[in-house]
Length: 464
Image (tube, rainbow, N blue to C red; front, side, top):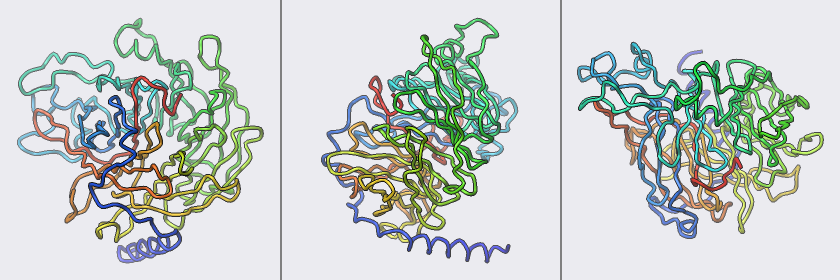
């Protein structure tokens, strides 16, 4: 296919998709006040964003909507010699060169992220490095980092932990509801690594016996498992796949010690909802009644009952080329909705700037009748992770692509914040440029955001 033909096809699909969805709601101008949503911010609240191309985690303070800090998952500048530097002889390497430098031992392709039930830990996956890292959410530091023996004026004071090596393509980690285990889907394989959290922390801190492993077991599952999410009671695990049109359902069977003894309950055929077999994201509703799935190549989302035979409740088409990534739920006094972040980028967004839409699905409609009732601009390009605050009044959205030249934050990856105290009419609050990680040898730009979580440290969150 020629470049010209590809471009024609791309813009034709985008135009068709744009016309398939209801018109976006009007939004407040940039810098608008959060209004009632401001009361839903606690001093402990932070937003964490994984950045795949820079292998960093950005930490945003929602009170100011600015970047507070960046957590470093690279191993650059741990040694003063040129082969170990991020910037050498004044030259910043490409992403591919960066992660293939001699003796680089840092994260490759930082991707998934999830908070523990009490918000004190974050688990982050390195897709390319086949490992996960645990982050102390309160201290904003990687668990297991050690003092750098080569520390000096031009080197980092810490040496990055190697994390926990698990297997090929760890895509998304998810804590069990009791917080005792972390289930990590190995997308490049057909199994799930089940990690004991307490032992993982001891192992990372060097407090466990040599040769011991935090991996309690490897659970066989569907080929290409993308993500696990647990029902509200923590008794069932739903496993989506990016290779086959099926969903695995396991009984968790936690023992007296809280550790699981999983057994496959059933495998659901979802080929009618996801013929291509590419379902990267799943999440249960806060009330525990439904589990929702994002079918990226089928341009749709669907939901099923978490009870009985897990019957299909709704399939919601999103328009050709929509390419849904994540879903998030907001329910408050003014409505109940499902938001779906779309990878599609449309020209002519607010201010004439290209951006992705977020689909609004009215969840208050009866089962079988849910549909898209509106969209709003994500205020960024290729929207991906999204998460709400505990009060369900604020929504934060991460984006994979940088802002275009001639725009307010040109060349930056951005996060967007919205007031969703009226879930059907989100109001834009701020576009937050993610800036750089300052390394001794140069600035590493935070780039290609994937997962985003809103955490209130020390309180029960969405995984509890």
